[in-house]
Length: 266
Image 1 (spheres, one colour):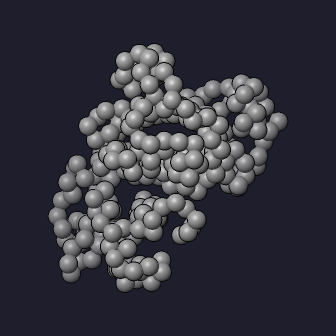
Image 2 (cartoon, rainbow, N blue to C red):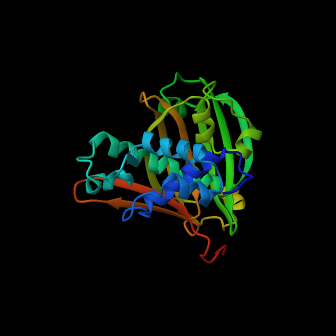
Image 3 (cartoon, rainbow, N blue to C red):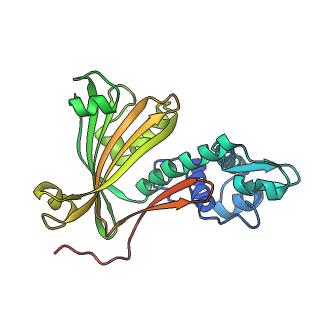
């Protein structure tokens, strides 16, 4: 764990275990017990129990006395019967958004703008607001050790959460929304190609005209109300988007930052 992160220990452990679950780390032997995890992370059992309760609420694990703790998709092998369909869908949704939050915690951010503005017609339509409604607009450049990764512009309905430049420097926007009581639900994402203009090229340290990944993501709450519109431009040599498809139609997604690829700025 990184003690400098502005998140409680139980939440950091929750994020770490969730990522390990998505990697299939515990598919064979199940999730270690509370004592083992407490020793591993150097915390008390109460902290571990709270982390595991969050994973249960996400539909990622199932805990049964005498059977241990298992990834939900492995629960049938642990003798627990059929996995509910809605739990599996919840796990996938939280997995993607949670993975995005985890990536945000592992990278640095430079907040270029944080202000309340009147929504353009396009932004108002996407967020189901009246034209000209107040929204919080933020522009951030996120970087890894190798250099800049993305230039991100987000719009959030004004008053939905206490968002400031200082808060954005410390925490991902999705975390700020959750802390304000927003229950995140589904998200819709579109990925296409776009060429870097002079402003974006300077922020991402690429040549003007370089090909970028253009991501538009609309996040809704549990009541299907739009709560965030994200428009991001990503360097394809440092950003990866992976989809896992199954024969029965399940979709799981994951984003990651590439640290070992050669930086190309020509």
